Structures are given as C-alpha cells and as structure tokens.
Length: 185
Image (cartoon, rainbow, N blue to C red; front, side, top):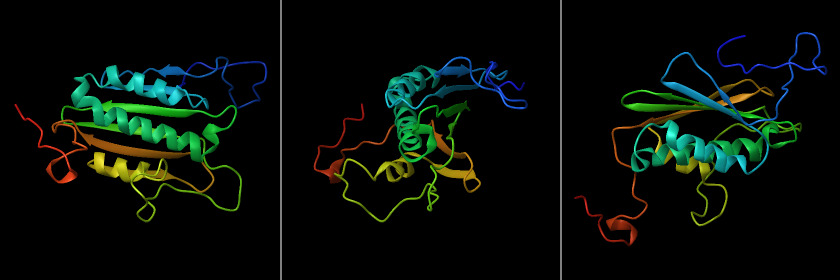
C-alpha cells in the first residue's frame, strides 16, 4: 500500500480490488510534510468541507490563501457536477503540495458519466459573467499561474492548478470595475 492510499478492506471486496470500509471524507497521509490530501464523497456539502480543509492546510494567512480556497471550491464543484464523482459512491481526491513560492493543487475525479459524449475540462466561449454557472474554469484560469489536466478517455481525470503564493489575492473590484482603488497600506 502506498502512502496516499487509505487502509481499505471489507467482505464485498473482490480479489485484486479494495473497497472502502468507511465512507468519505477521509484524510490522505503523506511522508512529506509539504503535502496533504483529502478524499471527499458525492455529497454537495463536501464542497464546503473542501474549503474548510484547504484554509488551514495552506499554512498561510486567510488573505494569502484565498485564491487556493477558491480554486479548491471550483475544482471540487466541477468534479461533483460533471463526473461520476457526484454519483452515489463517488469520490474526489484533493492533494495540496506546498512550496515556498507556489501551491500545486491536484483534484482527481472518478471519470465521466456514461454517455456518447466524454467531457474534458475546457473553457467554453465567453458566457454571461453574471450567470450562476459556466464560469468556473474561466475564474480558475484567472486565479492560477498555470492549470492543466491529465487522464484517458473514460477514465479518472486529474486537474492540476499551480497558484502563486507570492502575490496578494486579485481584487474583484478595482479602479476599472466601478469601485474605488484599494488602500494599499
């Protein structure tokens, strides 16, 4: 068993396969102190749990970890909404790698739901910015220094985002956004 795999067993386990004995969420343990992770279930309330988990695990001030918490929220929401991770028994694995200048966030889902179309993460054509959905990856792109995804058709997919820890969070309101310039003192 590797260091990222929680202990699993059970009578329903088929040879060569393991089943969880405890329903998610559960923490992942790593030997390296700069890594941490959590496995979440299909409950939409686990998005809030992911945000709550990310804030102290950023090991930074609330202001400096804001972009990370928002990125976690976006990626877990997308995994639950667009993949089998949101179906009963589904899981989402979130791993955070803290470096002095960056956070690397990896979110792995259970793969696409059955159907003729296999979705992959991509930014759609510009949508209404006031729309309640459809802007998640566009916002992630604005928050991150870099993001990508890996996986094979029909298999679990991992979205990786690299966030810069050395800059302050972006302001949603600025001089050109109808607001006053922020006080920088």
